Amino acid sequence: MAINPVPRRTLPDVVAGKLAASILNNTLKAGSQLPPERELVRELGVSRSTVREALKVLADNHLIEARQGVGWFVRPVDNANFSRARELAQMEREVQPAAARPAIGETPTGPRRLPVAPEKPLHIPNLRTDRLGTFDFISWWERKRVEEAKVLIVGAGALGNEVIKNLALMGVGHLFIVDFDTIEAANLSRSPLYRESDSGRRKAEVAAARVKDLNPNVKVQYLHGDVTTQLGLGVIRRMDVIIGCLDNREARLAVNRFSYWMNKPWVDGAIQELLGLVRVFVPGQGACFECTLNEQARRDLAVRYSCPLLARQNILLGKVPTTPTIASIIGAMQSQEALKLIHGMPVEPGKVTHFNGMVNEMHTTAYRSREDCESHWTYGEIIELPTRAETTSLDEMLKIARADLGPDAILELDQELILALKCPRCRTVEQILQPISQVSFEFAHCPACGAMRETEMTHVITGDESFLNRTLASVGVPPLHIVRAYNTQEYRFYELTGDLETALHFSDFEETSPTHRESIRGRIHLGETVRIEESRSNPARGRVVLHD
Ligand SMILES: [Zn+2]
Ligand SMILES: [Zn+2]
Image 1: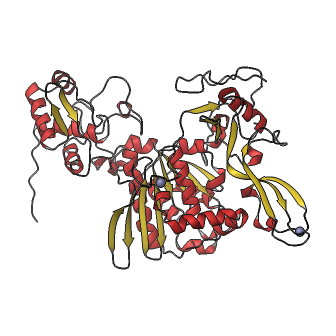
Image 2 (image 1 turned 90 degrees about the vertical axis):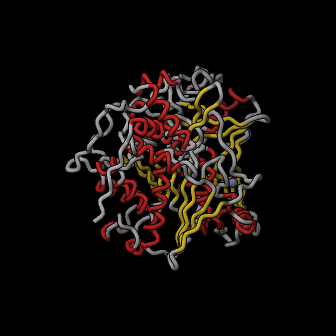
Image 3 (image 1 turned 120 degrees about the horizontal axis):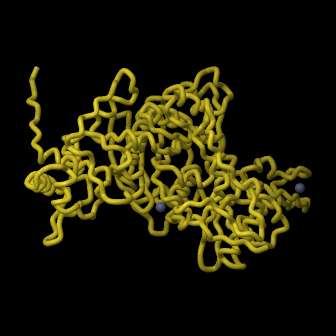
């Protein structure tokens, strides 16, 4: 057996490692200037010459660069310098206290803090009592970030089972699982979370319950429903990563748009027999899912939308033959991409990695981002309202928008509202007034003569409607949704934040329910100033004043 010498770490290496770790975890951001030497000397408790040597190590590894007469600046971490940064960071593997780190996607506030002082002892986890202890030995693993992460898993089929299992084992702290399906015998051959006795139960609910079995420390929530129509955008807004474990293009397109609108990264996976692919999409960085669709696919979508009820019917039927093995491989890769996103590590957005299990070949190619892609749109400032989808009428919502945007403001619904079905043969008209997702395909046929009826529908509310007293929920707006309104100049975005407590809690299957449930006013009374939760970060503060 060969005995490798223990690498000797000099103090400058350790200091360089600390700084490299800070660059990797984004505490020191690309393009930002390093603190001056004397500050580094003080913060790190080392001599000036040690600091200088450490800076030289970082510069030699292309992690920082000098600007004449100004100082040192952090260079972006890319594929070229990433592995070197990680090696350096490994020399200083001490995990820094969470409070000093920015949350995912946030910029650090207050004075810039450098990671842990060099004299802090290495943390040795207790592997008898700490189920996540071994992860602390991974150089870049940040337990706190992983614990605090919020991940939405869309689809609890074969891929979803693998992803959910992996995330629960890794201690990803908050999982939100969405699926509209129920468990049947054929699922049992590829879904390790399901048992024979679960037959007929809801996938999302059973998967969430099994998360608690696998790792009771993980907080979980499930939604038995369709992601395309029943998940409020406010849920997506509060996630760190979205993972799509889907089997159809329509649902992917919806997840893609929602992620783009809320500026969130999403990880797509797809499997068929022994083939699979993984891709990460990050708004504004390369292609999105819609960019990847070819001419024919986009035409297909357009054709389907021309017969809306039939389109929905077909989406629900898609079945693709898969094996549990390819689900393990692709689900594992998706989970790893999510883990990298949680850590702020580099990923390759807009690219696809194909895996062919028949010949064990893997290759990655980049998609081309389309200039005219309709998905490339991110919501602006989101105005939080203390209102709820169940209790707010279209009329009230329109008044809020008009108080803000002027009298010509119009509401735009995400889901088509079916107003009426008209029979071309017997000339009868049936008023429907239901969101398209709640009208089944059978309804398209005339009950009298059987002919296919024409669908009259809308997705805008102009104020002229006869049904303005209807609630947002009744026209298909899900809880905690973000409602769009526009006038001739601009869009504004109103979140139904009154739904927050019930729509997003991560407390399913918790033995003790949260004790500090704040009371939320369900209705806005017209004519008075809307009081919104006092919070410095709440952009709605004082924004909306209603006059009847
Ligand atoms: Zn696109
Ligand atoms: Zn008829």
